[in-house]
Amino acid sequence: MKRRMATLLPLLLVISMLTAACGSSNGDSAGTEGSGSLTLYYSHAADWSDPIVKEFQEKTGITVNLVGAGTGELVARIRAEQANPLGDVLWGGFVDGYAVVDDLLEPYESTELASLIPEAKSPNHTWYGFNLEPMVIVYNPKLVKDEDAPRSWEDLTDPKWKGKIAHADPVKSGSSFTAVVNMILSKPTREEGMELIKRFVDNLDGKLISSSSGTFKGVSDGEYSVGVTYEQGALKYLESGADLKIVYPSDGNTLLTSGLAIVKNAKNMENAQKFVDFLLSKETQSQIGGIYRRTVRTDVSEPEGMAPLDQLNKIPYDMEWVIANKEMITKKWKEFVVGQ
Figure 1 (cartoon, rainbow, N blue to C red):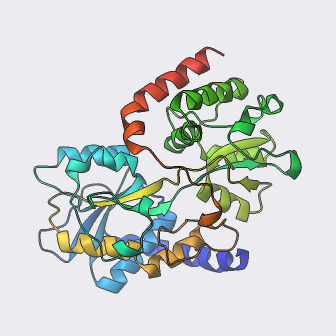
Figure 2 (cartoon, rainbow, N blue to C red; figure 1 turned 45 degrees about the horizontal axis):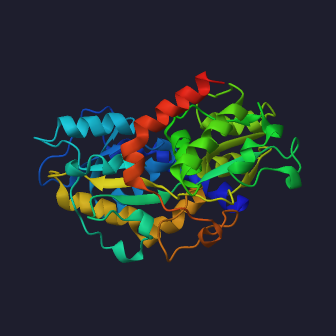
């Protein structure tokens, strides 16, 4: 896998340098109705997503105008523009963020629908998952013996880890919030889940890092013994030679996906549909493992070094409950932190 990564990643960087042809990324561009273009609102990192866009352009001849920003900002823009949509496709962020703006998204039954895992399909086809984003536990093997490493969310409440856990503030970090939800849903009841969070916060001992990406560095550098973060980032950091090992929690993972959707009444509807089908295609999905991302297709295998999906303990993701209780979860988190 390392040899394959070493070949692929420099190629992606070279292609990324060529993405000026993709169109403006300053937020001011938009496709013309019926044109050979589309406007993509995206929140992914350009180093890996721009090369995918570049390949789409080369295969279809469709020009993609890039508008990059945070997912929340892009969703607000789509809402403000709903009377006259300027974007055609939204790509990035977790799908629970798409579910709350379902009325702003265009239903579309992708040609790839039958080959997707259930977690990557919305009930009315208004959004799709592009890749799975499991949350993982990481530890520094120079500080923690394999036999002593935490194997579950519950293990992170063991007093021996007090003050040694790298975790970002879920009020500020989307992936950190997803990890907290994961912990809650790993228990039989929501009450037991919240009690787990309370014990976990107590074990943080008042320490919070600025972002989930900081977990890799903090653990690898030895500032923390263990940490909680997202799989893609952990795998990428591990391949760079960092002192990290990855654990998939035995008490479960919700397997939330990153999102992809067509903007309602998009001006370049046909091109938008082609872009969605391209991202979900077997060809594209077969390549994303090389950039540390887990496929949402049932007919594509994970690359070497990534735990097979059927080996993960999957937890049903109660999206309606999470959306309805997000404010409560963040409020309780703040109370637990203050009450330490």
